[in-house]
Length: 128
Image 1: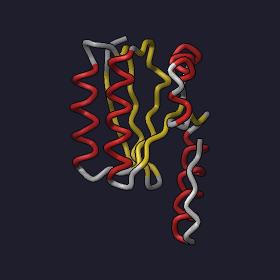
Image 2: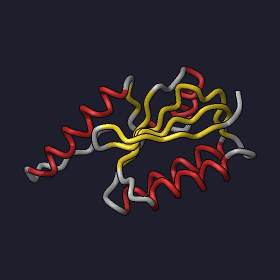
Image 3: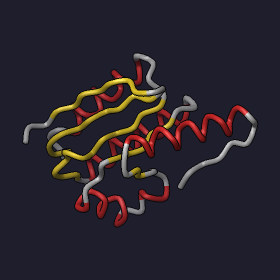
Image 4: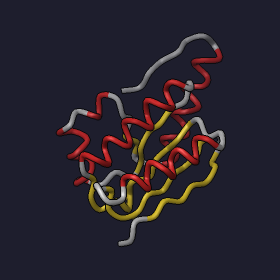
């Protein structure tokens, strides 16, 4: 499967679909594309990893960097469609402590709406 990144807007979120391998060769392109998406105003990303076949430490570094950039702008980033192989990488590296992994886009939208609602009432919460 060839590396590809596509994105769309969905109920206040930017859904970023990544396909193929995220590794030392594709990570610079992934970083560039995610920065372009953020620079056009996207603040809340849901990254669909359903078609990612491999994820290495370089790719994780890109995702962590983008996460921190979004948090500094009061944004958010979560993940959906994570297969068992990629989920294992998140668990082994303990990134599940900072990244939220959703089962579906509907779950991601519901969590985002709940977080926005909490902020509107002054009850800011962080999912883990």
